[in-house]
Image 1 (cartoon, rainbow, N blue to C red):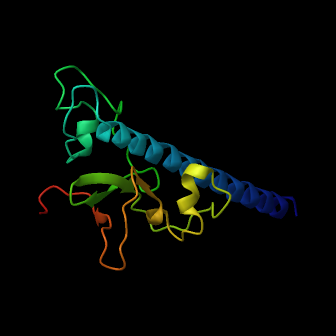
Image 2: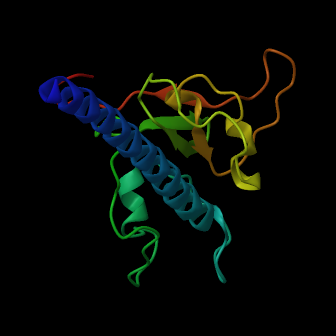
Image 3: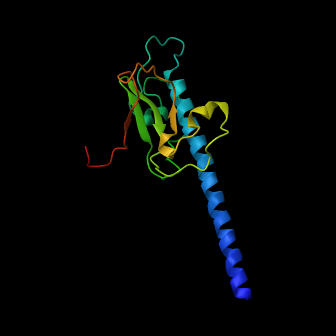
Length: 158
């Protein structure tokens, strides 16, 4: 009888441990995505003496700005997607990279009561729908300007 009770208790502890780990990864997704989005915002914000905004073509440019003679960093390191532990899905528009999204198709634990900056995530059914975009694009009907998602590139695959 004691062994059965211990098995039930261990099962309950395992479930709560699993749920706590999933919530922690979800929080980390929000943190990392926000860090990358904020870095992109700083990239696209004109600095004194800068006349033209250069599009972001590679996330690695956020680590050290190739446009600057001095060492300008927008990110300290390039974070991986915490839900899949892979590279982010890149979101582009015709001018360059404008955001990232998770590649995970899992159902989010958090479905509502998001802070103001994450209101767009309300009711999304997959983590891949949580897009960390530095700007919103105008949508004109079905043919309007919309972000283009690209999967992370794999070595040897065009």
